[in-house]
Length: 216
Image: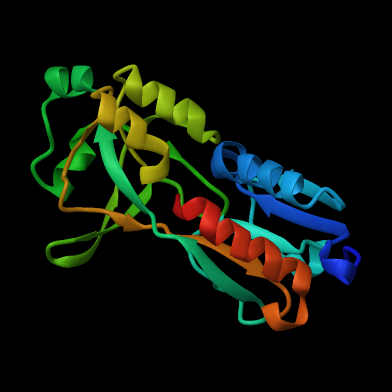
């Protein structure tokens, strides 16, 4: 396990071992950790980008930043930011293939599928007007990297289901358009850790920082 962080004299010291999934880790966690390091220069930060389920206890990780809630009863968690996955595509794709009018019509479309950590491949669970619904989509292109899926969608190759944090800029610029806007998938951002915050000053300090940083 990483050594305990000292807070003697008000200046934290020690090692913080953090893990995160690839897309969110590169684009959001890494910049936040660099700011944390500037604020607390005596802290050594070790970030691991892992595209698989993580067990902080077994792997000696202080904080696992993940999309989706806590499933392991032996761990603790704090929500860092609200988020949801949304369906979207490029205008060029919709011009050629039309918009799906119902969730069932997605099976007639070209969908871009990624398996992130422990997500079932090609099975989309979406909250909609009638509650939770599930659709098994047909994937003409798939990859294990979210940035590739994002690029394919912007290039007009199909419909993707991606976190709002990942597509917000494309939606604002018109490179992407939401489809089936009444549907979404909860995908809040969580910090997961092996001990209570009250027992780990280093984790408590980082979690509080991330809550403030990601809220912006």
